Length: 134
Image (cartoon, rainbow, N blue to C red; front, side, top):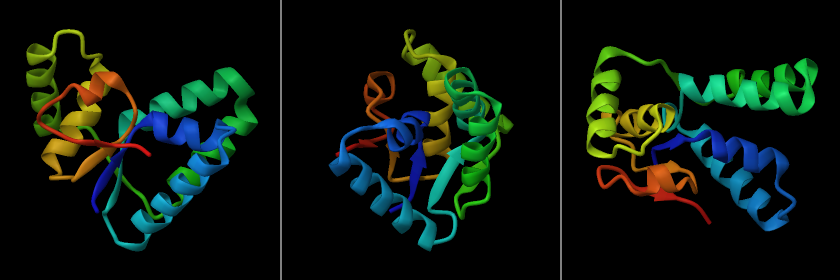
């Protein structure tokens, strides 16, 4: 499986009290890290994850958690012109779609990913990509 990881995947993995979800997330992450370029993290997810962790827990926790993602075997996908154009098309087709979610979905489309790991309803509405969540 080749998957794009949404911010919600990381937040839920870190903060969920649901042990069954945490187990699924850990197994999914382990599987994605075993094969090069199969676990993709859009750079905008780095922004969102760091911001949320910084607001909730402060700089030390935010940096520790972000560094675990950056040092993992996940592949960071930077926003390029092809992804930006695809995101713009999605924003026009789905007017209520936030820009960050459009970039995440566009990353999945442009990288031919199988899915986006999210429970975000904004991304779930997009017909051009699939989502996966337990």
